[in-house]
Image 1 (cartoon, rainbow, N blue to C red):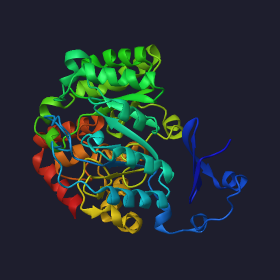
Image 2 (cartoon, rainbow, N blue to C red):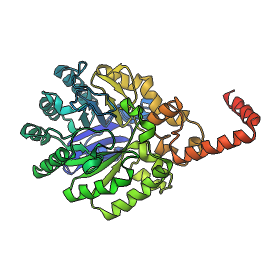
Image 3 (cartoon, rainbow, N blue to C red):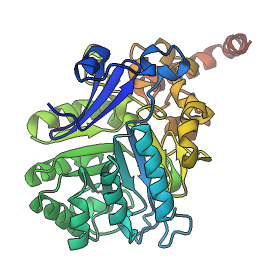
Image 4 (cartoon, helix red, strand yellow):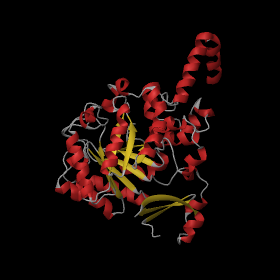
Length: 407
Protein backbone atom coordinates (compact mmCIF):
# COMPACT_ATOMS: atom_id res chain seq x y z
CA UNK A 1 0.00 0.00 0.00
CA UNK A 2 1.25 3.48 -0.87
CA UNK A 3 1.01 6.11 1.84
CA UNK A 4 0.38 9.73 0.95
CA UNK A 5 2.16 11.19 3.97
CA UNK A 6 4.48 9.90 6.68
CA UNK A 7 5.54 11.66 9.89
CA UNK A 8 8.13 10.56 12.44
CA UNK A 9 7.14 10.20 16.12
CA UNK A 10 9.05 8.91 19.13
CA UNK A 11 7.21 5.56 18.95
CA UNK A 12 7.79 5.22 15.21
CA UNK A 13 5.53 7.32 13.03
CA UNK A 14 2.11 8.20 11.67
CA UNK A 15 1.14 7.29 8.12
CA UNK A 16 -1.83 8.59 6.14
CA UNK A 17 -3.71 7.39 3.11
CA UNK A 18 -6.36 9.18 1.05
CA UNK A 19 -7.88 6.08 -0.55
CA UNK A 20 -9.12 4.53 1.61
CA UNK A 21 -8.86 7.49 3.99
CA UNK A 22 -7.14 6.71 7.30
CA UNK A 23 -4.35 7.61 9.73
CA UNK A 24 -2.33 4.83 11.35
CA UNK A 25 0.14 4.85 14.22
CA UNK A 26 3.04 2.49 13.38
CA UNK A 27 6.13 1.35 15.27
CA UNK A 28 9.79 1.85 14.39
CA UNK A 29 10.15 -1.53 12.67
CA UNK A 30 7.27 -0.71 10.33
CA UNK A 31 8.84 2.67 9.55
CA UNK A 32 12.09 0.94 8.72
CA UNK A 33 10.27 -1.39 6.33
CA UNK A 34 8.98 1.73 4.57
CA UNK A 35 12.56 2.92 4.21
CA UNK A 36 12.51 5.47 7.05
CA UNK A 37 15.42 4.44 9.23
CA UNK A 38 16.57 7.51 11.16
CA UNK A 39 14.90 10.18 13.26
CA UNK A 40 16.15 12.12 16.30
CA UNK A 41 12.71 11.55 17.85
CA UNK A 42 13.46 7.84 18.15
CA UNK A 43 16.36 8.50 20.46
CA UNK A 44 14.95 11.40 22.46
CA UNK A 45 14.28 11.07 26.18
CA UNK A 46 13.08 14.65 26.55
CA UNK A 47 9.61 15.71 27.64
CA UNK A 48 8.86 16.59 24.03
CA UNK A 49 8.59 12.90 23.24
CA UNK A 50 5.68 12.48 25.68
CA UNK A 51 3.29 14.13 23.23
CA UNK A 52 3.09 14.20 19.45
CA UNK A 53 5.56 16.28 17.46
CA UNK A 54 2.56 18.16 16.02
CA UNK A 55 -1.23 17.85 16.01
CA UNK A 56 -2.71 15.45 13.49
CA UNK A 57 -5.70 17.75 12.89
CA UNK A 58 -6.21 21.48 13.24
CA UNK A 59 -9.63 23.15 13.46
CA UNK A 60 -9.15 26.46 11.66
CA UNK A 61 -11.93 29.05 11.82
CA UNK A 62 -11.11 31.09 8.72
CA UNK A 63 -13.82 33.70 9.32
CA UNK A 64 -16.18 34.91 12.00
CA UNK A 65 -18.64 36.11 9.39
CA UNK A 66 -22.06 34.49 9.06
CA UNK A 67 -25.31 35.96 7.79
CA UNK A 68 -27.48 33.94 10.15
CA UNK A 69 -26.18 35.02 13.59
CA UNK A 70 -27.71 32.08 15.46
CA UNK A 71 -28.88 32.70 19.02
CA UNK A 72 -26.59 30.06 20.57
CA UNK A 73 -23.57 30.55 18.27
CA UNK A 74 -20.39 29.38 19.99
CA UNK A 75 -18.24 31.78 17.95
CA UNK A 76 -20.60 34.75 18.40
CA UNK A 77 -20.41 35.31 14.65
CA UNK A 78 -21.50 38.54 12.98
CA UNK A 79 -22.77 39.52 9.55
CA UNK A 80 -19.50 41.39 9.06
CA UNK A 81 -16.18 40.28 10.52
CA UNK A 82 -13.45 42.84 11.06
CA UNK A 83 -10.71 40.69 12.58
CA UNK A 84 -10.40 37.88 10.01
CA UNK A 85 -6.90 37.09 8.82
CA UNK A 86 -6.02 38.12 5.28
CA UNK A 87 -5.56 35.45 2.61
CA UNK A 88 -1.81 35.92 2.84
CA UNK A 89 -1.88 35.44 6.60
CA UNK A 90 -4.07 32.32 6.30
CA UNK A 91 -1.60 30.86 3.79
CA UNK A 92 1.33 31.65 6.10
CA UNK A 93 -0.33 29.71 8.91
CA UNK A 94 -1.14 26.82 6.57
CA UNK A 95 2.54 26.76 5.58
CA UNK A 96 3.46 26.44 9.25
CA UNK A 97 1.01 23.54 9.71
CA UNK A 98 2.42 21.80 6.62
CA UNK A 99 6.00 22.18 7.88
CA UNK A 100 4.99 20.71 11.22
CA UNK A 101 3.49 17.68 9.48
CA UNK A 102 -0.21 18.26 10.20
CA UNK A 103 -2.42 15.88 8.20
CA UNK A 104 -5.93 17.38 8.25
CA UNK A 105 -7.30 20.92 8.48
CA UNK A 106 -10.97 21.23 9.42
CA UNK A 107 -12.03 24.60 8.04
CA UNK A 108 -14.97 26.45 9.53
CA UNK A 109 -16.32 29.74 10.80
CA UNK A 110 -18.63 31.52 11.18
CA UNK A 111 -19.57 30.22 7.78
CA UNK A 112 -16.44 29.41 5.76
CA UNK A 113 -18.16 29.97 2.41
CA UNK A 114 -18.74 33.61 3.39
CA UNK A 115 -15.08 34.21 2.48
CA UNK A 116 -14.84 35.10 -1.20
CA UNK A 117 -11.35 33.57 -1.29
CA UNK A 118 -12.37 30.32 0.43
CA UNK A 119 -11.84 28.32 -2.75
CA UNK A 120 -8.27 29.60 -2.95
CA UNK A 121 -7.68 28.56 0.66
CA UNK A 122 -8.85 25.00 -0.07
CA UNK A 123 -6.76 24.79 -3.25
CA UNK A 124 -3.73 26.00 -1.33
CA UNK A 125 -4.25 23.35 1.35
CA UNK A 126 -4.12 20.65 -1.31
CA UNK A 127 -1.03 22.14 -2.95
CA UNK A 128 1.00 21.89 0.28
CA UNK A 129 -0.20 18.43 1.34
CA UNK A 130 -2.95 19.31 3.82
CA UNK A 131 -6.28 17.48 3.52
CA UNK A 132 -9.02 20.08 3.87
CA UNK A 133 -12.43 19.34 5.37
CA UNK A 134 -15.24 21.78 6.12
CA UNK A 135 -18.36 22.12 8.25
CA UNK A 136 -21.02 24.35 6.70
CA UNK A 137 -24.63 25.35 7.32
CA UNK A 138 -25.33 24.46 3.68
CA UNK A 139 -27.55 27.48 3.11
CA UNK A 140 -25.71 28.60 -0.04
CA UNK A 141 -24.48 25.68 -2.11
CA UNK A 142 -24.27 26.48 -5.79
CA UNK A 143 -21.91 25.49 -8.62
CA UNK A 144 -18.93 27.40 -7.20
CA UNK A 145 -19.34 25.85 -3.74
CA UNK A 146 -19.76 22.39 -5.27
CA UNK A 147 -16.47 22.73 -7.17
CA UNK A 148 -14.71 23.79 -3.97
CA UNK A 149 -16.17 20.84 -2.05
CA UNK A 150 -14.94 18.40 -4.68
CA UNK A 151 -11.41 19.26 -3.57
CA UNK A 152 -12.07 18.28 0.04
CA UNK A 153 -11.74 15.07 1.97
CA UNK A 154 -15.06 15.50 3.78
CA UNK A 155 -17.91 18.02 3.94
CA UNK A 156 -20.25 18.00 6.95
CA UNK A 157 -23.52 19.93 7.18
CA UNK A 158 -24.86 21.09 10.54
CA UNK A 159 -28.31 19.59 11.15
CA UNK A 160 -29.75 19.39 14.68
CA UNK A 161 -33.21 18.17 13.75
CA UNK A 162 -35.52 17.23 10.90
CA UNK A 163 -38.15 19.68 9.64
CA UNK A 164 -39.27 22.14 12.32
CA UNK A 165 -36.78 20.66 14.81
CA UNK A 166 -33.93 22.04 12.69
CA UNK A 167 -33.99 25.24 14.79
CA UNK A 168 -34.27 23.50 18.19
CA UNK A 169 -30.82 24.72 19.30
CA UNK A 170 -31.34 28.27 18.07
CA UNK A 171 -30.00 27.55 14.59
CA UNK A 172 -31.28 29.92 11.90
CA UNK A 173 -31.76 29.01 8.26
CA UNK A 174 -34.03 26.34 6.80
CA UNK A 175 -33.96 22.57 6.98
CA UNK A 176 -35.02 22.43 3.32
CA UNK A 177 -31.83 24.25 2.27
CA UNK A 178 -29.58 21.99 4.35
CA UNK A 179 -31.40 18.94 3.01
CA UNK A 180 -30.97 20.16 -0.57
CA UNK A 181 -27.25 20.80 0.01
CA UNK A 182 -26.71 17.33 1.43
CA UNK A 183 -28.47 15.71 -1.54
CA UNK A 184 -26.48 17.89 -3.94
CA UNK A 185 -23.21 16.75 -2.38
CA UNK A 186 -24.20 13.10 -2.66
CA UNK A 187 -25.33 13.54 -6.28
CA UNK A 188 -21.94 15.08 -7.11
CA UNK A 189 -19.88 12.33 -5.51
CA UNK A 190 -18.75 14.49 -2.60
CA UNK A 191 -17.98 12.75 0.71
CA UNK A 192 -20.64 14.21 2.98
CA UNK A 193 -21.79 13.80 6.57
CA UNK A 194 -23.84 15.47 9.30
CA UNK A 195 -22.77 17.32 12.43
CA UNK A 196 -25.51 17.22 15.06
CA UNK A 197 -25.33 19.22 18.30
CA UNK A 198 -27.10 17.20 20.99
CA UNK A 199 -29.08 19.07 23.64
CA UNK A 200 -32.12 18.48 25.79
CA UNK A 201 -34.16 19.98 22.95
CA UNK A 202 -33.43 17.25 20.39
CA UNK A 203 -32.25 14.31 22.51
CA UNK A 204 -35.50 12.38 22.08
CA UNK A 205 -35.39 12.86 18.30
CA UNK A 206 -31.89 11.59 17.50
CA UNK A 207 -33.21 8.45 15.83
CA UNK A 208 -35.08 10.61 13.32
CA UNK A 209 -31.79 12.21 12.26
CA UNK A 210 -30.07 8.83 12.02
CA UNK A 211 -32.90 7.38 9.93
CA UNK A 212 -32.78 10.43 7.65
CA UNK A 213 -28.99 10.12 7.25
CA UNK A 214 -29.31 6.44 6.47
CA UNK A 215 -31.90 7.15 3.78
CA UNK A 216 -29.56 9.66 2.13
CA UNK A 217 -26.58 7.28 2.56
CA UNK A 218 -24.33 9.94 4.07
CA UNK A 219 -20.89 8.90 5.27
CA UNK A 220 -21.34 9.62 8.97
CA UNK A 221 -23.10 11.50 11.71
CA UNK A 222 -21.00 13.13 14.39
CA UNK A 223 -22.84 13.93 17.62
CA UNK A 224 -21.45 16.89 19.53
CA UNK A 225 -22.56 17.74 23.02
CA UNK A 226 -24.06 21.24 23.46
CA UNK A 227 -21.37 23.35 25.16
CA UNK A 228 -21.40 26.41 27.43
CA UNK A 229 -19.32 28.66 25.23
CA UNK A 230 -19.95 31.93 23.41
CA UNK A 231 -23.69 32.54 23.17
CA UNK A 232 -24.12 28.93 24.24
CA UNK A 233 -23.57 30.08 27.83
CA UNK A 234 -26.68 32.25 27.87
CA UNK A 235 -29.23 29.42 27.83
CA UNK A 236 -26.94 26.56 28.73
CA UNK A 237 -29.01 25.32 31.66
CA UNK A 238 -32.02 25.20 29.35
CA UNK A 239 -30.18 23.17 26.69
CA UNK A 240 -27.82 21.06 28.82
CA UNK A 241 -28.45 17.32 28.83
CA UNK A 242 -29.96 15.91 32.01
CA UNK A 243 -28.18 13.15 33.92
CA UNK A 244 -30.78 10.71 32.66
CA UNK A 245 -30.00 11.69 29.06
CA UNK A 246 -26.24 11.50 29.56
CA UNK A 247 -26.52 8.04 31.13
CA UNK A 248 -28.80 6.67 28.44
CA UNK A 249 -26.89 8.17 25.50
CA UNK A 250 -24.29 5.43 24.94
CA UNK A 251 -26.76 2.49 25.18
CA UNK A 252 -29.06 4.32 22.76
CA UNK A 253 -26.19 4.88 20.34
CA UNK A 254 -25.32 1.17 20.46
CA UNK A 255 -28.91 0.27 19.62
CA UNK A 256 -28.98 2.74 16.73
CA UNK A 257 -25.70 1.48 15.32
CA UNK A 258 -27.13 -2.04 15.11
CA UNK A 259 -30.34 -0.84 13.51
CA UNK A 260 -28.98 1.64 10.95
CA UNK A 261 -26.17 1.32 8.41
CA UNK A 262 -24.50 4.69 8.94
CA UNK A 263 -21.33 5.44 10.90
CA UNK A 264 -22.06 7.15 14.23
CA UNK A 265 -19.35 9.23 15.88
CA UNK A 266 -19.16 11.26 19.08
CA UNK A 267 -16.95 14.15 20.09
CA UNK A 268 -14.62 13.92 23.09
CA UNK A 269 -17.10 15.58 25.47
CA UNK A 270 -19.29 12.45 25.26
CA UNK A 271 -16.54 10.06 26.44
CA UNK A 272 -17.67 10.25 30.12
CA UNK A 273 -21.13 9.11 28.99
CA UNK A 274 -19.46 6.13 27.35
CA UNK A 275 -17.06 5.02 30.09
CA UNK A 276 -19.83 5.25 32.70
CA UNK A 277 -21.07 1.96 31.23
CA UNK A 278 -17.60 0.37 31.60
CA UNK A 279 -17.00 -0.88 28.05
CA UNK A 280 -13.91 -3.14 27.68
CA UNK A 281 -10.93 -0.88 28.25
CA UNK A 282 -8.62 -2.82 25.93
CA UNK A 283 -11.09 -2.42 23.05
CA UNK A 284 -11.26 1.34 23.59
CA UNK A 285 -7.46 1.53 23.57
CA UNK A 286 -7.21 -0.50 20.35
CA UNK A 287 -9.76 1.82 18.71
CA UNK A 288 -7.83 4.87 20.00
CA UNK A 289 -10.90 6.20 21.82
CA UNK A 290 -9.85 9.24 23.80
CA UNK A 291 -11.33 12.13 25.70
CA UNK A 292 -9.94 15.67 25.58
CA UNK A 293 -6.71 15.55 23.56
CA UNK A 294 -6.16 19.23 22.92
CA UNK A 295 -2.52 20.14 22.56
CA UNK A 296 -1.72 16.67 21.28
CA UNK A 297 -3.93 15.22 18.55
CA UNK A 298 -5.90 18.43 18.10
CA UNK A 299 -5.37 22.16 17.94
CA UNK A 300 -7.73 25.04 17.20
CA UNK A 301 -6.96 28.33 15.45
CA UNK A 302 -9.35 31.27 15.62
CA UNK A 303 -10.14 33.64 12.76
CA UNK A 304 -7.84 36.25 14.36
CA UNK A 305 -4.86 33.88 14.37
CA UNK A 306 -4.83 32.88 18.05
CA UNK A 307 -4.42 29.17 18.75
CA UNK A 308 -5.87 27.05 21.53
CA UNK A 309 -5.95 23.43 22.65
CA UNK A 310 -9.74 23.50 22.14
CA UNK A 311 -12.06 25.55 19.93
CA UNK A 312 -14.12 26.43 23.02
CA UNK A 313 -11.34 27.65 25.33
CA UNK A 314 -9.61 31.02 25.04
CA UNK A 315 -5.88 31.60 24.56
CA UNK A 316 -3.95 34.64 23.35
CA UNK A 317 -0.91 33.04 21.70
CA UNK A 318 -0.35 33.49 17.99
CA UNK A 319 -0.38 30.64 15.48
CA UNK A 320 2.43 32.46 13.66
CA UNK A 321 4.64 31.31 16.58
CA UNK A 322 3.23 27.79 16.66
CA UNK A 323 6.40 25.94 15.66
CA UNK A 324 8.08 27.00 18.90
CA UNK A 325 4.96 27.45 21.03
CA UNK A 326 3.93 23.84 20.40
CA UNK A 327 6.67 22.84 22.82
CA UNK A 328 6.70 25.84 25.18
CA UNK A 329 3.09 27.00 25.62
CA UNK A 330 1.83 26.70 29.21
CA UNK A 331 -1.70 26.68 27.83
CA UNK A 332 -0.99 23.51 25.82
CA UNK A 333 0.94 22.05 28.75
CA UNK A 334 -2.19 22.35 30.89
CA UNK A 335 -4.09 20.15 28.42
CA UNK A 336 -1.27 17.60 28.25
CA UNK A 337 -0.97 17.34 32.03
CA UNK A 338 -4.67 17.03 32.80
CA UNK A 339 -4.37 13.57 34.31
CA UNK A 340 -1.46 14.67 36.54
CA UNK A 341 -3.40 17.55 38.06
CA UNK A 342 -6.87 16.16 38.49
CA UNK A 343 -8.74 15.20 41.66
CA UNK A 344 -11.06 12.46 42.86
CA UNK A 345 -12.98 10.64 41.61
CA UNK A 346 -10.96 10.84 38.38
CA UNK A 347 -7.74 9.91 40.18
CA UNK A 348 -9.16 6.49 41.09
CA UNK A 349 -11.03 5.90 37.84
CA UNK A 350 -9.89 2.95 35.71
CA UNK A 351 -10.69 4.99 32.60
CA UNK A 352 -8.62 8.07 33.51
CA UNK A 353 -6.10 7.56 30.70
CA UNK A 354 -8.95 7.25 28.17
CA UNK A 355 -11.52 9.78 29.39
CA UNK A 356 -8.92 12.35 30.55
CA UNK A 357 -11.24 13.95 33.10
CA UNK A 358 -14.06 14.83 30.72
CA UNK A 359 -14.81 18.16 29.07
CA UNK A 360 -12.70 21.17 30.10
CA UNK A 361 -15.31 23.60 28.78
CA UNK A 362 -17.92 22.22 31.18
CA UNK A 363 -15.45 22.18 34.08
CA UNK A 364 -14.55 25.81 33.49
CA UNK A 365 -18.21 26.82 33.26
CA UNK A 366 -19.52 24.79 36.21
CA UNK A 367 -16.47 24.89 38.53
CA UNK A 368 -14.35 27.78 37.23
CA UNK A 369 -11.44 25.32 37.36
CA UNK A 370 -9.67 23.98 34.26
CA UNK A 371 -8.44 20.86 36.10
CA UNK A 372 -11.70 20.01 37.89
CA UNK A 373 -13.32 16.67 37.00
CA UNK A 374 -16.19 17.19 34.57
CA UNK A 375 -19.21 17.66 36.91
CA UNK A 376 -21.60 16.32 34.25
CA UNK A 377 -19.82 12.96 34.13
CA UNK A 378 -22.21 10.50 35.86
CA UNK A 379 -19.38 9.11 38.01
CA UNK A 380 -18.35 12.60 39.13
CA UNK A 381 -21.99 13.58 39.60
CA UNK A 382 -22.57 10.66 42.01
CA UNK A 383 -19.30 11.35 43.83
CA UNK A 384 -20.21 15.03 44.36
CA UNK A 385 -23.72 14.09 45.48
CA UNK A 386 -22.30 11.71 48.09
CA UNK A 387 -19.84 14.35 49.31
CA UNK A 388 -22.67 16.81 49.86
CA UNK A 389 -24.52 14.20 51.92
CA UNK A 390 -21.40 13.54 53.98
CA UNK A 391 -20.88 17.27 54.56
CA UNK A 392 -24.40 17.59 55.95
CA UNK A 393 -23.81 14.67 58.31
CA UNK A 394 -20.47 15.86 59.59
CA UNK A 395 -19.41 19.28 58.24
CA UNK A 396 -16.55 19.78 60.72
CA UNK A 397 -14.88 16.50 59.84
CA UNK A 398 -15.24 17.22 56.13
CA UNK A 399 -13.77 20.70 56.54
CA UNK A 400 -10.84 19.29 58.53
CA UNK A 401 -10.23 16.69 55.85
CA UNK A 402 -10.17 19.34 53.11
CA UNK A 403 -7.65 21.41 55.07
CA UNK A 404 -5.41 18.38 55.41
CA UNK A 405 -5.49 17.88 51.65
CA UNK A 406 -4.60 21.51 50.98
CA UNK A 407 -1.58 21.27 53.26
